[in-house]
Length: 474
Image (cartoon, rainbow, N blue to C red):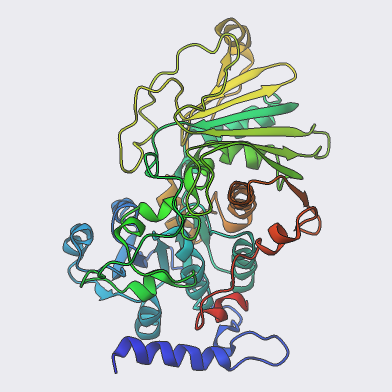
């Protein structure tokens, strides 16, 4: 029997040893003080889970801070061409294909982990890591279902670990500018936001009239397909699930909204205290089908009045032919060097750059994505306001250093799960409305969909595969 199989069996045996009172696996019951900060004079011992493509980029960024030691590499496709660069960078790091095996064998050597894997696997890996008392950096969006994010927020609080979601603009100029402008009263009384990402996506050009998921193909020799599937519904391997293609499918990814929403709406969501919407309405879905995301989507999110702030309508646009109108005096949508290329293609000289327009009762702002700063429009108004704008502090650390310094107790993360979670849940509700092609009415207090029983059940997603249920018992 393979050692991975033995590890899985031992994990399941532990998971079945539930506390009668708490229904939590006994080895997941944290001891007091089980998660101390790394000594301020030491480097963080880190394990990279997912080392190809975006996961590899995260690994390099964290390593380049000079604040961590790389003790382990983990990837279900270990040995494949796209994992070679990181493997060659860290030849002394221990290597694993199954994250559960890694934690079973060398948990005592690890302080923190990164989770740079497909969206559907963010949840079980993060839960496993936190249950072992490890700090977690996870790519956006936090997870694929509303309930998974609820559990992740609960686990972060329970285990007392440092968490960070990888919307890196949350540590760049836009974050500090939005915060300063909000506190100075420049951004106030916002009533509407338009957000857009209209570049080509991987599924553009696919046949929206398909009647089933792709047919099975031989699994690459280097790949552990069963672990790749994880908690999700099983489908036989197909190349259109792998190497970023997972983003196209409802079963595995979160589409354009989950991919770019956190880079465009993160600061508005936090500093306007938007929380969760009361209504999500798919106004336009081109080539809607039950398997992969529409070619174009327009989704309206309605957020209620919050304290002395008025209600806000946020309208999301994606798709090549679905570019929103912009206000008078918008100016030119120039390509912004702060916005990275879209995976799988180049940023086109777009009619409208990925970004947002923010409408308040007195002022209108335009902004890009990631770390791009806001501008007041039109130019005449910007010149009039120039002398009233507050000084914006510089970031003391980028998003990666912020995470590692927080593991050392020197900083606090800017996108911890309790802040990133509700933002990600907004996108989960948006994707659910896309998938069902129905308006959803949401109760922010009970966190339930009140007008659609099927949609309400889908807040939890489909039941996890047999053998993966324990992750939902935190």
